[in-house]
Image (cartoon, rainbow, N blue to C red; front, side, top):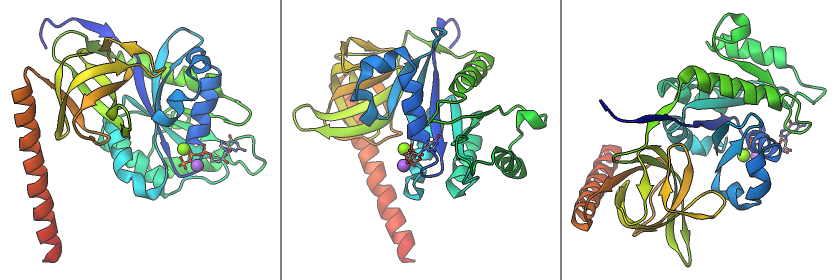
Amino acid sequence: DEGAVLQPRPAVVTVMGHVDHGKTSLLDALRQTSVAAKEAGGITQHLGAFVVEMPSGASITFLDTPGHAAFSAMRARGAAVTDIVVLVVAADDGVMPQTLEAMAHAQVANVPIVVAINKCDKPSADPERVRIQLGTEGLLLEDLGGDVQVVQVSAKTKLGLDKLEEALLLQAEIMDLKARIDGPSQAYVVEARLDRGRGPLATAIVKSGTLACGQYIVVGSEWGRIRSIRDMLGRATSSGRPAMPVEIEGLKGLPMAGDDVVVVDSEERARMLSNGRKKKLEKDRLLKASEERI
Ligand code: GTP
Ligand code: NA
Ligand code: MG
């Protein structure tokens, strides 16, 4: 990317952890204290991706993930599109299987972790035990001389939310996040759904470049031409900028979370690439099925 113009961009933060440890509650609490939250209403909630404007004026894009064991693939993809993972651990429950699995996904993707020990309002909360458990699992916490920040929070009482924001902004600052805003766009799908009237809709996060209406795109093995782009408040916008979640309309089929978005220069290229990828998927599927029979 020699000579490309780089601009600072917001961090993309994915919240992970064991089921019911309070990931969504924590995001709701952060959203309530933010400016964007008040405008967003219910729209962002089901999208699982939204932008929080911090009191400092900086903004952060947050992605939510489910903690249920069945959603391992979603956590793996979440870790791949993200800059920072917030590992939520309930202070009463402690480190659990999906805590460790989320930690592993972040480490494999080489994504820094910020630990949020949640539910610290509970009488049965034992944040010290959580610290020891995480240390035992090899996480190098800052209070033990490592560089992983730990904050104690309560989504219920909003205790420590300011500290969590500070920790995230500090981590983002260390990473000096920049993106190329011109040239071909690189983006990833974080969620996709079928809308009765509008057809397949993909929520994507742009990593670099700019997505624009009219572009031909291949998303995973699907293709389409961008008909409209909306921001997380449902407002039409002509382009998607780095780290901003946008909803793309105009795909012919439904992509999957984690799929990459590739911009191509013609419908023919889009169809070709999509067909090639579909064939490869089918081949892989048959191969896997035959391996399972052996
Ligand atoms: P999954 O998405 O299903 O994995 O769960 P989650 O991690 O998003 O947890 P969720 O936010 O749904 O919260 C689970 C339960 O814990 C709910 O009953 C919340 O009200 C409760 N809870 C979340 N945060 C706190 C907290 O800080 N203190 C207390 N006391 N309860 C909390
Ligand atoms: Na839950
Ligand atoms: Mg949740």
